[in-house]
Image 1 (cartoon, rainbow, N blue to C red):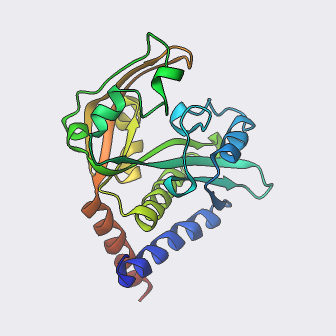
Image 2: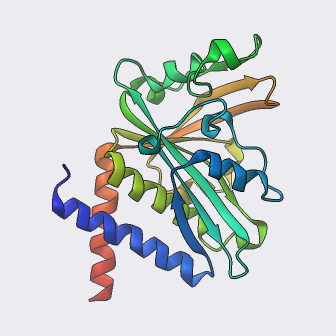
Length: 236
C-alpha cells in the first residue's frame, strides 16, 4: 500500500492537470476497457490507426493493467487521446520485450507476420526491468495543438500510472521529429536515447525508427511530489 502522503500528493497532482485542461475547454475522462478505446479511436477523424500495443484484438490488456484518457471539447467532440499500459518484466527487459514482438502482440506466433521485426539497441531499454509503464497513442487535434495539451496529457499519464502501479519505469517511443521540435521536452521525460525501436510490422503498415524516452520510478515520484509542492507554494 502506498504511503497516504503519496496518495494525497498524486490526487492533487492529477487534479491540477484536470483543471488545466478544463481551462482550455477540454473535459478529460479515463477508462480501462480498451475495446471502448478502440471504438473511440477508430471513429476519430485524422487520428491514425492505434498500434497493436493498445488493441485488445492483438494484445489483451486486463483492466488493472492499462488505462486510457479521452478529452472532449465543449461540443463533446474528441480533441485528445492517449493510452498507457503496464508490462511485467520481472524476468526480462523492455528491449527483450520489444525484440520478441511481445510488446505488440499477446501471441507473436499467432499474429506477427513472418517479416515483422523490431531491433532495440538503446542501453536504457536493456536496463528496464520490473514494472514498466508504456505511454503511447498520444493524439491532439490540430486546433488544440500548441496550447500545452501534450504536457497535460503526460501529467495525467504520470499521475495515474503512479497511483495505479508505482512503476519502476515509465517510458515511451517517439519519433525523432518530436524530439527536434521540443514536443518530448514538454512531456517531462528526463532521459532520451536513440535506437529505441527500429520497427517493421508488415500487416500494420508500420515502419518506424523511434527514440526511447523515460523516467525511473523514483524520478516519477519526485516529479509528482515536487510539482504539487510548487503549485501549493504558488497558491500561498
